[in-house]
Length: 458
Image (tube, rainbow, N blue to C red):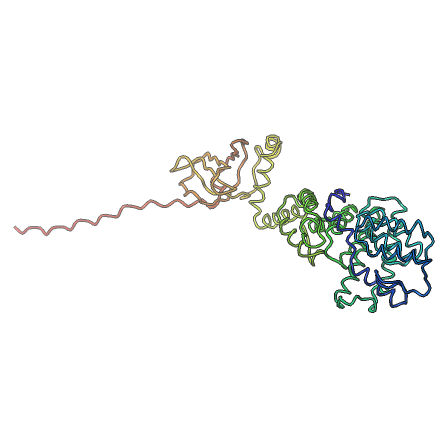
């Protein structure tokens, strides 16, 4: 387990485990009454096949049902058990014990008594409920405890229809509420089975049961947390986003049935670490938590990109750029090699005194010297402003070019420095294209011959 269950659940939530739905008592009493058995608590039993041994036994029972103090009620029950160990109402007495232990918060006693009740009636829904409901919180992972919890949970599922028959619906509950109560009990049963399989490390079976529990009742932060754990335990990297979703659900969901605040905080801390490890950073994590808070299970199309996914996308995007700009691609490859740890060796072995293919690189003019008939030109190839290449010409160029002029070039690599970065090539005028043509000098306008003055007549 990632975090201790009791810590995740919280003290307040643990106490709520002992809050048995009151309708379960009412439905049980109504069902017994319809079969001619024990009537509602506090009334004289009217089961024709059950009789009190004497008036004193009934008076003791009556006192128990009227007692409001939990400890005094327990003392009275113990007295009844001591004086009448073989009562005809043993099943009813065990139910009263369960109710009393519930009021006193004695969880282990509830389970112990529920197990005894099941020896009398293996289908007793109240007993099945308590064993399935409480065992996961007790920390007893022994094989016998797991087997008992699973058997109780499957017994609940097998008896749902009979327990929630229409004639057993309490009068104060409408059909929708009765259906919701049935769904909640189904969720508890599947949850217990999921917990059992999780402890057994039977992860696929645990996942199936826990998903069924969430389908029956989405308001279960602990089930979401367990689901994340069992999915992650499968160590299938393709399913890890699903585990991240359920951790996010456990951390972000704060409605009915959510984890305790401290538990949600612990899960959230782990989620941030796990998410960053998978995605590379926490970008998108807040959106994931919003989605998980609003949905008990991953919505259609749910996906979280892994570090590998992101890198592959970058590679594909760069490939498209390189295909559209082969000159830029060549320069990026050369520069990456030159600025790397083995840059000097790469230059000496692969570039020095070698001439690049014709017009294989492209850059923008940054500067030139001298300014009129330059013999050196500095070019920016990466960002358009930072000089990275120097072209040296033995024969000066016939004219200069404006900064920003784009030229294509080749040349023979002669030297390079890593800091500041600069690669020097020797080139000729024929090795470059895009250099502006020289502007022809304007010839001075021809003078017109002066008009001859007419000769004077003598």
